Amino acid sequence: MKTILISFFSILISLPIYCQSLNGTELGIDASFNSRTGQVRSGNFGLGIKYGFKFGETIILGPSIRYQRTWSDDGATGNKFSRNSWGGGAFIHARFSNVAFIGVQAEFIQSPFTSNGLMSLDGSSWVATCLIGAGLDYGFENNWRINAGVYYDILDIPNPNNPENNNPNSPFQPYLARNKQNQVIPIVYRISLFIPITE
Image (cartoon, rainbow, N blue to C red):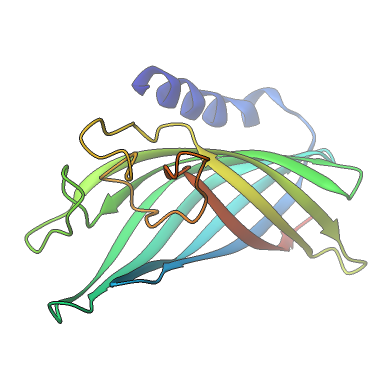
């Protein structure tokens, strides 16, 4: 998996050298929210900022930073916990006919969870994430655009000790999607706004 991430970042860094048709830059802001109810109520809120270089009308890529807030409230014990996390990486999107997009976003993010899936009070571990996704994309007349997508974390590592929690370290927990066996599926939903900076 490290080879995949290194290759991805190498391509992102080298693309501007080989592409001559830089068509400006954009500032992107995305948001995501997950929560779970029950005896233990938990959730997270994520906010990402992207600086994208546009190549032609289709490709946009660049660096990204991310803020995550994770919380948990155990109704049985009264224990409450919340944690702020940061991270960064890079992204690439391909836009098609002002209707749809596909994209990849790779980031290293601090996770408030330990390897057994419990929230840590002492420190954070750094977790590699690589989201592959697609969704709707629409550009408005004043050139700002909005997209809404579904992303799958291909680096989410199965946890044989707990089939309810595929990746005990994932900063994107709790996941909402589940399969027929009631196992979590590492899917994240995001809405993004892109605003032109230069043309």
